[in-house]
Amino acid sequence: MPARGFPCHNHDDCMSDMIARAEARCKELRLNLTPVRRRTLEILLDEHRAIGAYDLLARLAAEGLGSQPPVAYRALDFLVRAGLAHKIEALNAYVACTHSGGDHAPAFLICRGCNSVAEANTAPAAGRLDKAAQEAGFQIERTVVEAQGLCPECQPDHAA
Image (cartoon, rainbow, N blue to C red; front, side, top):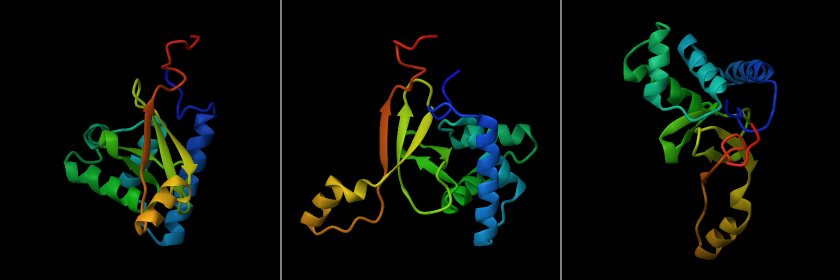
C-alpha cells in the first residue's frame, strides 16, 4: 500500500486531528460543515491522494449522500474556499489540506505511480519567483507549485 502522504504517521490520529481542526475552523468562520461536506473531507483525508470529483461522487452516492455531480462539486468548492482542501491542477483532482487553519503557500509532491500527494508548506513567492516578479513589475497574488515524481513506495529500488 502506498505511503499515505509519504511521511510515516498514525493515520487514524491524523484523520481525527484534521477533522477536529476542520470543525474548529468552520466554527470560527461561522461556516456550516454539513454531513456531505464533512464526509467529503473524511474521504479526502483517508486517501492522501488526489481524487477526482466523479470518483468522490461515486463514494458519496454509494453511501446515500447524493448522486448528482453538483453534490460533489459544491462540497469540494466549500472545502477549497474554507482552506480545508486544495485542487491539484495537473490532475484536475482534490486533496485535503494538511496545513489547514490559515493562509499558506503549499507545494504539492505528486506521485505519478499511485497519485499520492504530500503537501509541503513553502513560500515560493519569497524566493526567485518573487525576485523575477519584482523585476517585471508584477504583483504575485497566488502561486501553485506541483512537482511530479515517485513516492518512496513507488520508486523502483523500494525494499518491499
